Length: 127
Image (tube, rainbow, N blue to C red; front, side, top):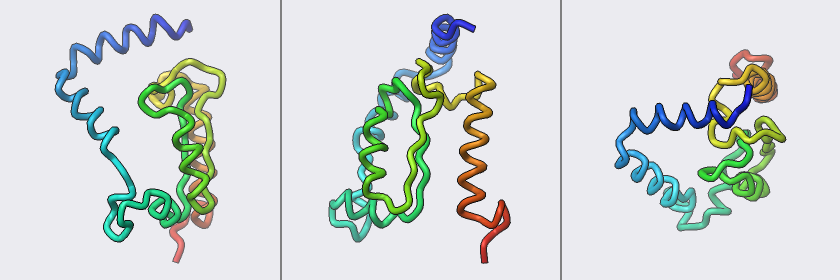
């Protein structure tokens, strides 16, 4: 499947479904979100990241909303973090985790299952 016509069709469908104001507010939310504003962090984003504990990261490639360098940089401060690029070598960008491509779904299932196995007793709730 050629990805570019599919992405164009998805964008066209989304543009009909969403109000432009929604996109504006989502952009503002992305721009204004700062873990450093968490109570007790006093504006220190690195302190907040270090306080996160174990947190997985799955990153889409060629994503203008979530550039790959940001979670890679943030993961330097999160204990036991692991950043995995979704569909390395593709151009699916922000839609890379959307489930449209079987190989992407298999990749996500494998990575997320592995993470849950790591932080639980093979899917069983830890005491």
